[in-house]
Amino acid sequence: MKELGCLLKTDESWASLVLRVMLGLVLFPHGAQKVLGWYGGFGFSGTMGFFTDTMHLPSIIAFLVIVGEFFGSLGLLVGFLTRFTAASLAVIMVGAIVTTHLPNGFFMNWFGKQAGEGYEYHLLVIAICAALVITGAGRWSVDGVLAKKLAR
Image 1 (cartoon, rainbow, N blue to C red):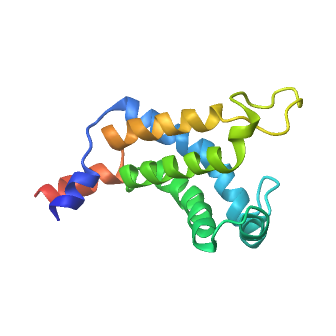
Image 2: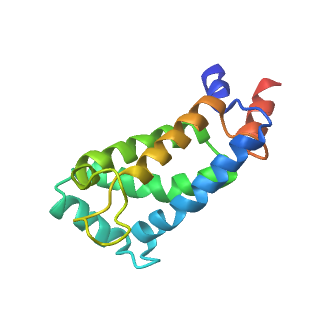
């Protein structure tokens, strides 16, 4: 139980709240594309097929990426398992850089002149995730409520 308390422990930081909620809002459409097919996405089976057949990712990795982005974004929005989720999302972003975006350079493809998107977005997500791993969920989080209950 002590380990769980350390995982959930947070303060009442406004900064962590802002980082957590904004990251959750930005990542939700990406996860919804992969799971639900919203926002022009291919849905779960289409994304699994792309990850496993085209990108040649192992099916367990493809599954974890899809589930991590969708449910991770929801977890961030309410502040549930924030440290675990942030660490997981950082790993997903490193994987996206290495498998897809590194050859395209740093910058996003603002003017359509690159072969694909660069990795600047992913670095920002990694930095936000690192901050959340360090600080926890912040104000108005499920983690904070659970940590207080475990401390009693």
